[in-house]
Amino acid sequence: MKKIILFAILIINLSCSKTKSIILKTENAEGISNETKLKINGIEIGEIENTKLDENGNVIITANLKSDLNIPIDSDFEIKDEGLISGKIINITIGKSKENITEKSIINLKTVNNTIFNDSIGTKIQKALNQISGKDKNDSILIELRRLNENLEKRK
Image 1 (tube, rainbow, N blue to C red):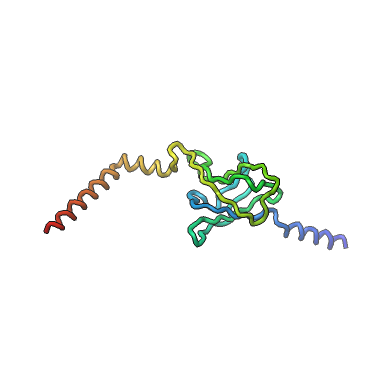
Image 2 (cartoon, rainbow, N blue to C red):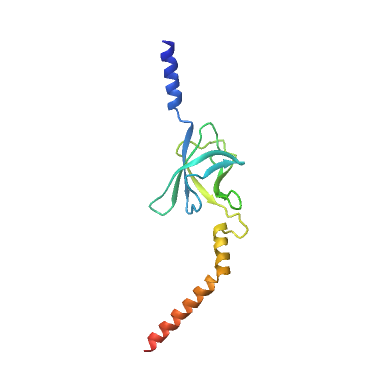
């Protein structure tokens, strides 16, 4: 009998979820993937389950948080750069509300550009490579040649 009770308790423990699912909504989720972590003060407390677009073009992100955490409903959720060459994280700044986030809470996600020029490192590298290779200059010459060609065609 004791074995059956212990087995039942074990099954119940395993079936109970250790996470709670929340919904994050944003207009721009650049850099966010299923590997993106949610952090409070640098400590990982959750991860992205999936992302999709709603009918209005907003990005809807389903995230799983550790269920034992009580995060106030007025906490700020922000997309931030984790480092200079690392990816993005969702940083949570704890609010002061007595009411906590619950399962399936819908939260607006903010985007914070905290790099030197408010631009991603990849874009900066691409711009630098274009300048070195002369690609930007070549593109502007091609555009000018096309414009001149169109003007010549109109005169015929």
